Amino acid sequence: MPKEAFGGDDGGSPAPEKRKLGLGKFGLSPDTNIRDIFWRVLGGYAAAKKPGVDLSTLENDRFALVRVAIAVLSTQQGERYGLAPKFIAIYSLMMIIDGGWNDALVEFLEMACEKKLGIRKEASHAMKKLLAHEKYGKALSESLAAMVRGRDTGPVALEYLADMDSPQLASAMKKELMIIARGDIGQNQLNAIKAISQIRDDPEIRKSLVILLSHWDAQARLAAAEVLLEIADDGEVRQAAEKRLAAETDEEIRKLLQRIAGK
Image (cartoon, rainbow, N blue to C red; front, top):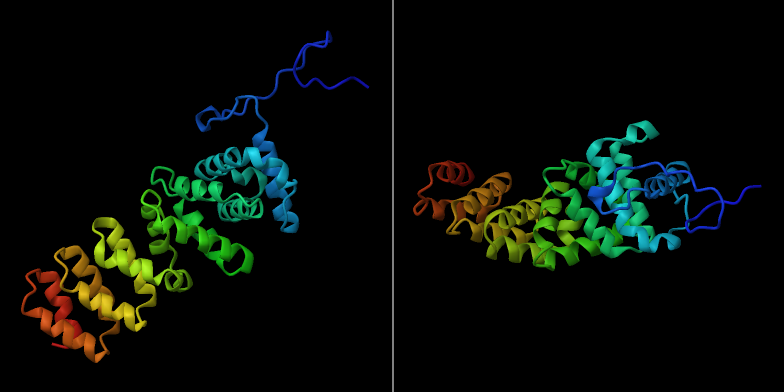
């Protein structure tokens, strides 16, 4: 049986050139077989809900595997393997969490959130599905909570929290989200308001939304008013809206306040 060549010169015939995979833009060697490993892992999850490879042997390749997952999702290459993008996203997250690769999980979520790739929807859907699973849900919740508190990762986590429609997550991070909703500015604030709107029946959340009716930024006031319109049956909310009407200068917000106040 001929010997396999793994590099180096043993005096025999040169090894055949390996197939090029075109992953240079993702920081991978052009002759790597990391895609093949990725599909073996996902094949295991698709067939038996467990990895098709011992993940402990892939610790050093975790970021490369994340980049392959992002590449496959963003270029819709999964169909040739019989996997829809939503399952590729789910199995990729399962792989990362089963491997215990917390840093790679953050990288996956950050990369999937890039607007030019257009795959945040798949990532959000995958996380929402896995939140129902005790093991995966715990890991995702902890990772997103840590990201919310980070200066660089906070905006990414807030986009997911606003997008996922998960009262479970919003409730778990209520304190952090209220602080951001009341104290931050711009898109971070609007995403935090959208996230806490998922638990708008919570008395503390209602109080925060009422306070936001007097915020200096019209976008924040508008976002708060839109949420409060859905709970206008609350007497305190109606009174707050009526009180704010006298000072409100934005016509769109005034119309919402009038509807909340029942006028």
